[in-house]
Length: 370
Image 1: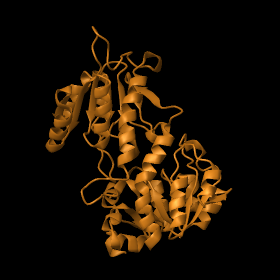
Image 2: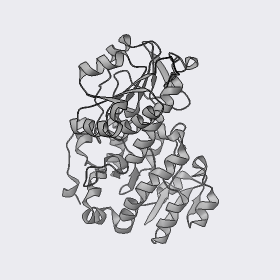
Image 3: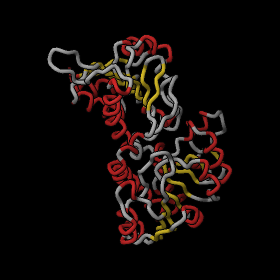
Image 4: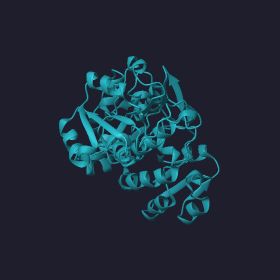
């Protein structure tokens, strides 16, 4: 199979979908790898490393798109890339279609086989291709929140850990999944007062076992959220329903009840955000203030640490990518039914139920097509 990888064109996105080691693995399996010149510079990988791995260096991104049967990326394609789609192309990347109707329509119109990292669900219920970025985003959320609590950024001027004789910051984490757990780990490590909320009592029991008396666990209800955020210095939104738009748990009305200069970090922004006042921001202009509350809503948070993020992501995606490349998407699905869950579009049809439900569109089970 001809496999390609091009530079990401999203604002301040320096991650890359394939490392030189990945390229070598595909070449060793008998595939032809085409990469855009300068592909890995933002993540610290040179063209010489890709060439040494057996990849062909191509000057034009368009030539790569036009030549390959499978395109491996990190982020969803942007409108400038839609004309480069072609029928039958396997697009293996994060898609986040529930919050992006134009991209959904472009994939369907071109009959692209859209294989989304974020909806691949293993037999044990884990989401292995989302997990590494969730871990990074969760940990970064506290780091970024701590920074924007500084007065120079419009924050209230609070140090998360405080010092002897001063109050610690209050952190509220909405969602106890992978993002929330990793946020909790860093927040506890920095010495803040941490409250974490989830609707799953078993998950709360698990978090209570891990962190013990260092955290407060609460069932996620509107009343509990409203009460907690009033005293919060930093709120982290970590809600995820795979493939579906995030529920709006953080209400606009809460803002006027919160401390002036408090910070809200919405990690769920890729799926539409879990805040009513959320709007996508970028690393070069990451924050805005609404009713006195600083909002950080960067849609590609792990892009701030591209070297770590690229290595973590590609460690997870390579094995599934090799299955698809070695057997073709159709046979790979038949041999490993888990891969069906990652197929969001196929032959012009929506094949992810949560995405279809988000648009009230017809859902087609990919097993009926493959």
